[in-house]
Length: 138
Ligand code: MN
Image 1: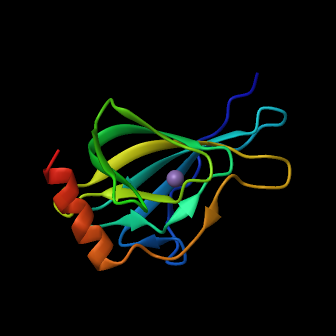
Image 2: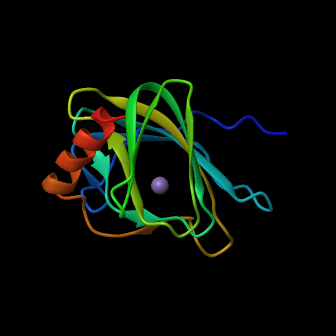
């Protein structure tokens, strides 16, 4: 066994996120397990770009309200203690609501030659606004 030191928190890069996002790695992918995990803090209004995970993803919400949206307009609003699964190769985004922050642990399966995420374009303001409406309708 090995004690993995606390990793530094890094600002989510603008190439992958909109707004203020902070990522703290929990564990890199440790061969042959290839599960990578990190804690992500999204300030209100912040979210990922659209992206896919070839092997899917687990998001476990620690605090606040996290939104997870897909291209078909479906949105899940998940609260602290709840977990959202993202299917393999389904384009989606996740983030805070416009009025609340979100903190989640993201767990993704990587492989020897892939970090587990393929990044796409930003979620537009229109798409994000529509997600707020969809989440409130739940
Ligand atoms: Mn994801």
